[in-house]
Length: 297
Ligand SMILES: C[S@@+](CC[C@H](N)C(=O)[O-])C[C@H]1O[C@@H](n2cnc3c(N)ncnc32)[C@H](O)[C@@H]1O
Image (tube, rainbow, N blue to C red; front, side, top):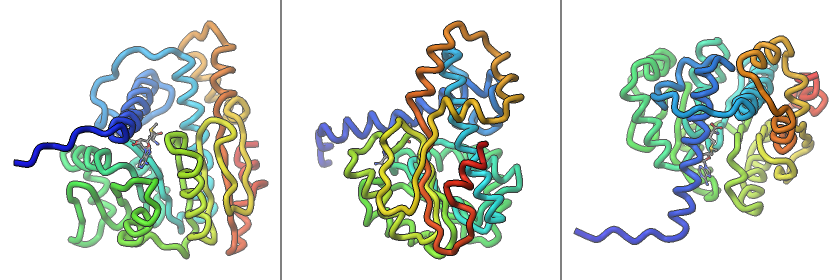
């Protein structure tokens, strides 16, 4: 039997990046267990609630999830769900199930992550009926593809790919019928930061040249998002997002846990932002910057 190749530094670095998926899911699991928002599905990816997280971390995740969902839901409503979503570096994110429950499903929801993460997610879906049932319900034929590294159904697709390999990514998405003619929303939540600026700008640029009517929403540290090839790009720091998401809900979550050091939360929120870039060849008028601002203000 051939000996396994020794780990290279690149393997180790990629492994560290993949482990951030568990960090994000564990924090979301904890925050939902405290009641910051409702997610009945995250428990099937991380069973245990895990160690306590500081209130400012929970509030930070709350703002991140609400902020991203706000733009996602607005895009779906404006396109009347006649669109596709591509979640880049989706990890163990549960948005597909939320959209199904809320009757807000796009024509097709795609997720991409490293093959190892995709395989883990698919394994969970295969073995947990609360995850597999909604998928089967939204699939009409007997052609459901569920192999080790990819899942393809009528409305949901998980692809194992490296986002730094653009030709490979493009090939796989085409193979699973991503349609460049359809209004498309790209989501990247804490993902581009794990690539070099050159790699992330190639990815953002690929999205811009491949789709004529699209929006790219990115949650990250400020100043990271590049405007490569997009007609418009703008950002709001998370402190601003926190102050404009529905304030009755903010008041509710602020009662959940006492936060001693308000400055800590402020510093944390100021460090991050939600950025978006848009292209609107179809002149649907729904993806302009003004529109995105209106979603929040
Ligand atoms: C911090 S996690 C965020 C996961 C998810 N977006 C969320 O917010 O819950 C970053 C994710 O990006 C993925 N990722 C980072 N670089 C990647 C690459 N080059 N190719 C594919 N996936 C990548 C990681 O595997 C991980 O799942």
